Image 1 (tube, rainbow, N blue to C red):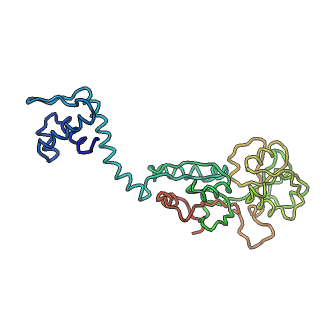
Image 2 (spheres, helix red, strand yellow):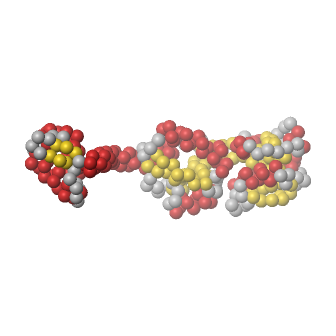
Image 3 (cartoon, rainbow, N blue to C red):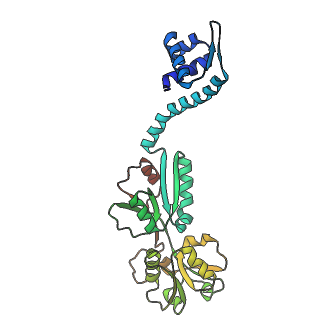
Length: 304
């Protein structure tokens, strides 16, 4: 069996090509140094060094082994430092869940910041709807999520990292696009509306229903994803409400219109206005991943 002492002894002799100088370098005498080389050659099963009273020469096998020996010693020397960096959270892996629209509004900024400030943390991305992210956190498959509220799981923590207005998505040339003002709920009277699944996309379903409470709109379709709703609008199947970041999707044949109060609850004068759409970061408060805290420190806290 190879030992680190044997490998260090071999590297010293191979680089010095002299047992006396190698012994001095290792702060040992020549007899134990010679025994390390002999045991190493027996373990490897080949002659690594040709030596006589006048010179020491590496064999072909010895030259090849020297390359591997240097890599082994380098790995040993850096392993402790890497372990300490992982323990402190400066290195490691974070498994990050995200939704498609959160990728537009937040993911790119976060990944760039991580690459600049925590380059030794590997980020493994998982695209999942909010319910899938919650499930992944509870199962230990994810460390962090960018998701939409509500989160009623006792072991999860969350905080707001991004806010934006809600807006209307209408077909290009639609009469609503030509009004030149923020749209009110009664502007949607009689219109076909593409809404969201009340279970899989509960958050945007509730935002849509709340804004259109007193409108006499017709819910023609319920979808799971913002992009699907936008594409159906482009196909002329109705109008939809979506976060302002959906403007970055670049879908042709549609127009975006501002909503009164930024799409906030039109019946609650005391409710927050302007940016009712929230994106939260969620994580398991019992996580033992040291890198998680470092990543959380790079995310904004709009509730602070």
